[in-house]
Length: 348
Image 1 (cartoon, one colour):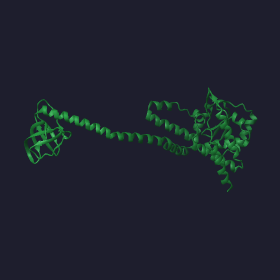
Image 2 (cartoon, rainbow, N blue to C red; image 1 turned 60 degrees about the vertical axis):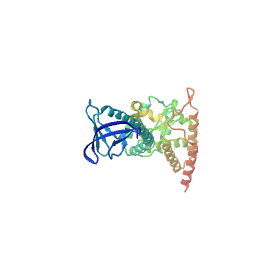
Image 3 (cartoon, rainbow, N blue to C red; image 1 turned 45 degrees about the horizontal axis):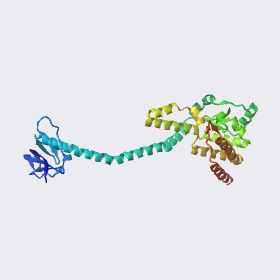
Image 4 (cartoon, one colour; image 1 turned 180 degrees about the vertical axis):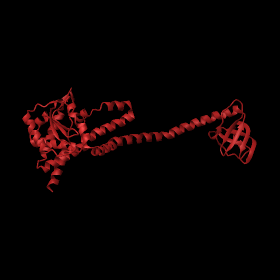
């Protein structure tokens, strides 16, 4: 086979334990052989060539613990050039082979992040919220109403009407060492007809909601619903989920996440955020069960939710339909199905 580079030198190792005069040959296919020996040919990329220092002899390490020494540095430099070219091609191949690992790592990262946000953080928030002492809920709820009053206006309902609904609420509010259930009235303004709960048991209803409800049973349905949110610690869980997600984003996006974290305000969070579907389902179920136990027809639950939904869909601000409500519009079909199922269970 035609050689393109030949280097004279001394071979160490092999069958002879000493050294022997040999010629290292590189052919057109960049295969290396040692002329006159039993050396098994190898690729140029398998050679380990010492750096050049002037015109001193250099050592070339070969496979099988063999070494080749030569002072023909110009010829060796040509081998080095071939070796670098071979390694470059090898590196490109290595990079291409690793692209699949890069893509796989990216997919796994996205999957883990998605799982953390949708499953891990909610599960951890649920466990943590239910294990925290009552003082934490009180700490978050106390003072929150005062801060919310910067955005909400005083109620315009007369004192007698407020007292009537306060007594109505007291008749259904659970006796609890964890929560101090209190009913608060405020003018909704942009919130419109609404009700929402704070972690410590404070429940706020707007004047517009009281006006929208035509029956006491409709008011009770919503109050039961909000009590369910408090007992299940939904607002606390949701605040923890939002904080955990923001911290995760802060870790991933650094400054972007930190900015979002700095803007997190608990009082505004309680009225601007919407509960998750699972939280709403739990609160709906609690309300329907309590209504059935009190011999209140669950039809009132569906009727008031329908009225709230219709009102929210008609709110328009600056030419855009917006929903600034604490409670998301309910799935009417789901409410009806839940009402029927619970009513059948109650009869059994």
